[in-house]
Length: 193
Image (cartoon, rainbow, N blue to C red; front, side):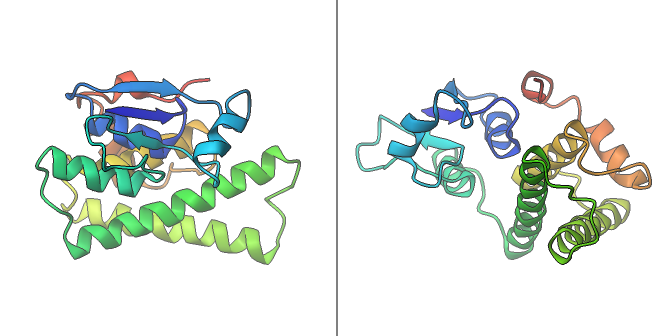
């Protein structure tokens, strides 16, 4: 098995943590640099992660973290996500996408703090999503370490690493991050420049 992605991508890190106790190869890809043209040949969306299993000749290179998770979960006999977990993953992905877009806009010289509809929607989406998960955690839910909690954990750490969201008033989220630092793969995959 081989996972392609960047060191800092939250979508890649989810899978790296999931696979932390499994033999696989990781190939770092710089989607904004020298790897861009080669990446475009494989994945027209120019997104990461990409996942391949050369031992399965019927499997194309998977071009999305959710597809990779689905395949890995079948391979490793991880129970399928239930509908509640799928909803939570959809919320995490939506918030993650909003923050990625805001980061790219900021890096492009756009002031995302402006009072503009697009920026306001992204900020509101993230605040309401983190409020939802903060309450869910404070209600004693999300205690198992699985793909949903891994994805949430990675999103929170990445948003903090990129200074994209202020979690100082989200006490349960901060506690959740602190309590999950011990898991295999967490420290080894922490985002760094």
